[in-house]
Image 1 (tube, rainbow, N blue to C red):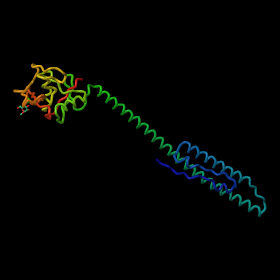
Image 2 (tube, helix red, strand yellow):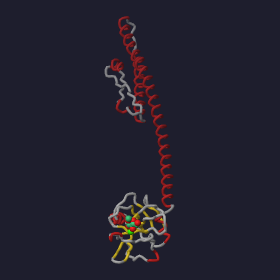
Image 3 (cartoon, rainbow, N blue to C red):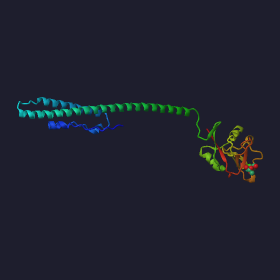
Image 4 (tube, rainbow, N blue to C red):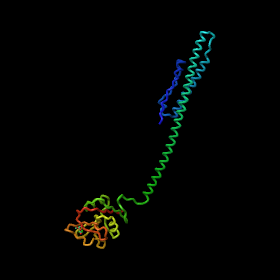
Length: 268
Ligand code: MMA
Ligand code: CA
């Protein structure tokens, strides 16, 4: 931004001619930032200078010189002074005119800068609107699940990236509004095998029965124990892991303290 420092115009010579001559002053504070107001002030100053110029001319015309050599000299001296005032006033006028046109140029430049910035802003606003509607469309385009969760047949599933014992694993799922996975049929068992992780599932020993975390008792027709499992090794195995994920009969009983990956399921 250009911040011109305008000279203060004062018609000093006129003060000397008239004694109480007008001083033509432009307050510099008003024109630090060129504006229409500054230009109006400039115009006023120029009009004042013009008026003063005319006054001097009139005053010079009113001087009648008597035909006396002595007073003629004084008369001519006075005319000289007035002429010098005219010259000074004229040069200030042309300098004021130059300043006004430079000021006008700056106002024009700023206006065109403003216009281009307004145009740029409206084009950016348009871009924002387009992006916003694109976002909304893609968001509305289908269901969205948290990162790391995969949809399958009415539920979303999460496989952990760290390992933990069975109760800690279950607590993680519960904290996400989910639970350890409940496997209801061969398709779902195949789906979770696809995670390729030795991982806890939501099956645990409850008395003499195996129970899912949703409270249902394990149905023998929908169980996928590995061969010779569950074997309750050392009489300590009361939780179930998906161990042999590359075969259909994939489950094994394990002590709850074993550190495993885990699989959560949440109905959606
Ligand atoms: C491990 C352990 C048991 C499982 C056997 C099968 C050695 O113990 O995972 O729970 O039954 O392997 O060989
Ligand atoms: Ca076992």
